[in-house]
Image (cartoon, rainbow, N blue to C red):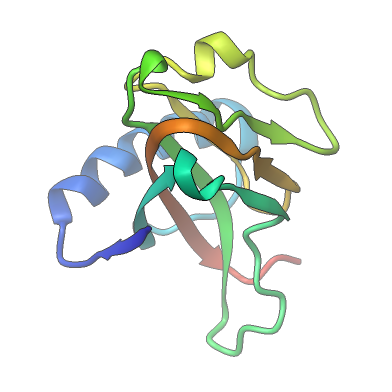
Length: 136
């Protein structure tokens, strides 16, 4: 299940604080305080997952690109099995640490990543994509 959150300035403000801090310490890309925000549930009864993908749409005509992606773990670790977040090209986060409720992960939107199938229970997360001027 996917739901889009609109007009939730307090969530945007909260997420931007994390993204801005990570950006200043690690990425140094040009971002705006503008993001699409999505709530996602992965159900074990449906083997909920996200296949390998990146978060950039290279053919946008509005002069903006997704620059930094953020995911927030909303479930407790024992709420589900499976559902591990991983990267294909760089080291993936430690599984035990990334499943802790409240964990925030910020990464460049061009990195290929996936969420493995949830085998039981429900995994809940909040994801957002912060934009900036077109990549050069």
